[in-house]
Length: 283
Image 1: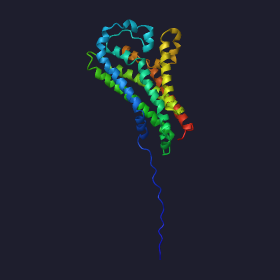
Image 2: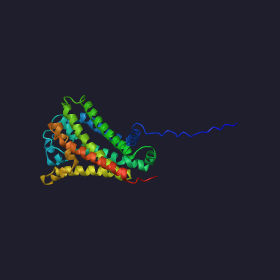
Image 3: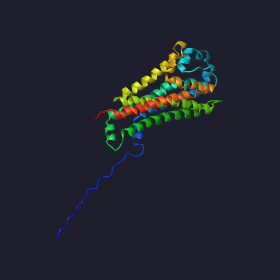
C-alpha cells in the first residue's frame, strides 16, 4: 500500500520593528544640518575664550544699554563685566533661539517629508509599524538632536573655563539657562513636526518652520524697541525664553519656559493627528 504524506504550510513569523530603528534612520537623515548646528555651536563658544580679553577692554556698556541692542539681544544687560555677561550676549541671547532653534525647526520640518520624497515611508508603513509610532520616533529623533546640541554647547563652555582666568560661572544658574533654551528648542521641534506632517516637500516644510522662528525673533526685537510695540512680545516665543535674566540676574519667571513646552507639545500632537488622518502620497 502506498501511503501519502500530507504537508501543511507553516506561515512565516511576522517581523516586528524592534528598538528605535526609525529614530536612528531619522538621525542619519538629519546628520548634515545637525552637524552644521553642532559645528557652529562649538566654534562660537570656543572663540569666546580668546576674544574675551580684547572685548573687556572695549567700551560696550553704553551700546548694550540702548533699546535697540536690548531688542536684538532679547534682554537688558546692565553691566558688561565678567565672562558670564560675555556668554549671555554672544551665546544665550535671542540669537541662540534664532540660530539653533532655526536649525531644529528646519530638521523637524524636513524629517517626515524626506521619507515621502525618497520612498522610504511606503516601505516602513508596509511593515507592521503604525503611523503613530513612525511619527513619534521621528519626533524623538529631533528631540535627541536638540539635546545633543545643548550638551555640546555646555561641554564647550566647560572647556572655556580652563582657558579664561576667573570665569566665575555659577553652574547652577548656567544649567537653568540651558534648560530655558532647551524649552525653546522643544517648541521649535514641535513646530517643525507640525509643518512636516502637513506638507510633502521637505524644503517647504523646513522653510516654513524656520520662517516662523524668524518671524518670532522680529516680533521680539520690535516689541523691545518701544512701549507702543510691547504687545508684540506676548506673541513672540522668544519672550518666554529669557536666558539673559537667569544667567546674569539669577532670576526667572518659572512658568515662561513651560509655555514653550506646552505649545511645542500641542504642535507635536497636532502634527500626529494630521499625519494619522491625511492621505499620504505613494511613490
